[in-house]
Length: 189
Image 1 (cartoon, rainbow, N blue to C red):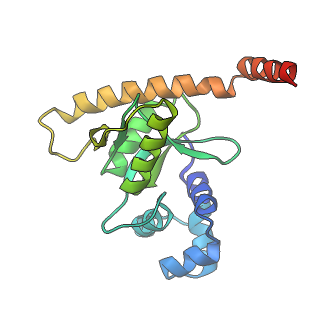
Image 2 (cartoon, rainbow, N blue to C red):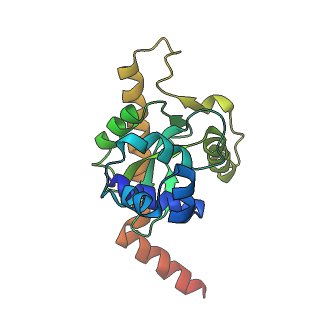
């Protein structure tokens, strides 16, 4: 699983923020913010503020939710759907447990703070790629306590869907597939 400091730095770049911008949002010095981002200072006391400032999307009232994502070696971040649904987690701990269980499928797996509107737009884009209409019910919070299903059973189903998506995505990094794609494109040129 990707190191939390790597994820925070990638989120900072993705949001187009500087360390100075983040320090201003957190009300700390630039040096303190830098240490938080690099993991040289424990972030536990300011984790909520960091997640709020770095969550993908436009902030809204309340706290961000958490999605299982991937951070590739080029610093690209992406949230991972479970099949054609986008599960989110209210608890960072539950999301982290799910992500850790997915490490055999992807070494790039991580937990990303996200705002619900961002997750919805991501789900809409996923469905649009297939020419399908997105359904609001396919964006849901796994651990919101409103379901009658036992959390362990629900998390198990979600983990299986995320695992299948991650294993399929691994083909995008597979050198054999990449060389086939390159060869096909070269023949076209």
